[in-house]
Image (tube, rainbow, N blue to C red; front, side, top):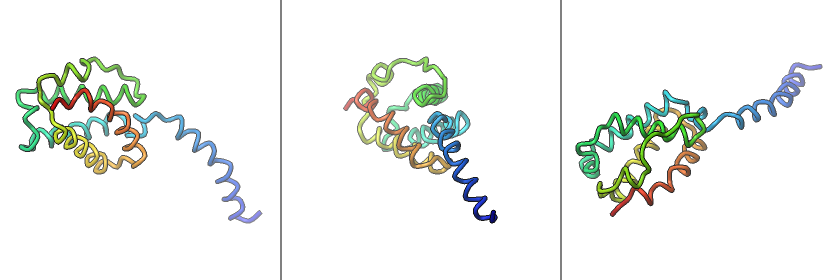
Length: 141
């Protein structure tokens, strides 16, 4: 058997196993787990909290608590095994007068930070699809 035929056979033999392992990995794992999710959230929230166009909803807010809650929530929603211990989104954002512009700024910051941290397109899109329905409870004006 030639070397190239052996390589081809090995590839065909192991490809299904690799694909099955990829499917078995949770979205949380594919995002990079806690280190990447925490880094992405901290950078994105920090960026939006410093942006004078949209940062009014972060006045007098404990950013560490916000970061921790978002990381917990992403972990839970993406199969990381965490339990979100915060309040529901409607209650958390009540009275903050969050605009669609502010919401979109955070989504943009999350996308940018995921790019900076090597998160794949598929994983980014899956996460954003999971988070998108929260918009109706977050945007209040």
